[in-house]
Length: 166
Image 1 (cartoon, rainbow, N blue to C red):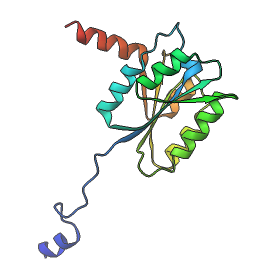
Image 2 (tube, helix red, strand yellow; image 1 turned 180 degrees about the horizontal axis):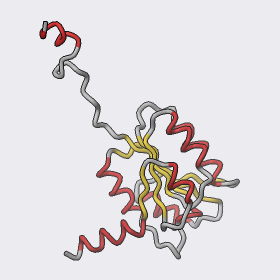
Image 3 (cartoon, one colour; image 1 turned 60 degrees about the vertical axis):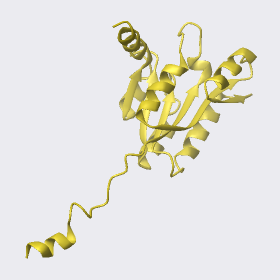
Image 4 (cartoon, rainbow, N blue to C red; image 1 turned 180 degrees about the vertical axis):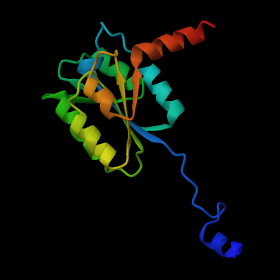
């Protein structure tokens, strides 16, 4: 009788769970890439590369972005998306489109505001893992309470600094 049940459930024949984690990252440039925040996108990128494979990396900028900023973003491996209108709308639409990409497992937002909640809700409804990188603990309470994982950029910087000085 035991072999009969093994036919229906055998650990060895059970499908293996994929450890794949393909990541898309969307950066709200005007909200995040400000001199007062001193954000280093390479820290975020390197952190995410430890979590999986970055397949889509985009920074959304407005028409006032300097050539130097655009060049720096591209040199870090991000695609720069320049919008004349509202950056938030373009980024939310692209993130929502990504929800339907079967090759993407995790959708990451780097922002300070809650404008992306509808895209996050849609991603979660479609089984995507959601993450947000925030500047500090006081930003976007709704985002913190909605996504699967929150990373505070200032804490990440501090941890890396402490680790490198050991």
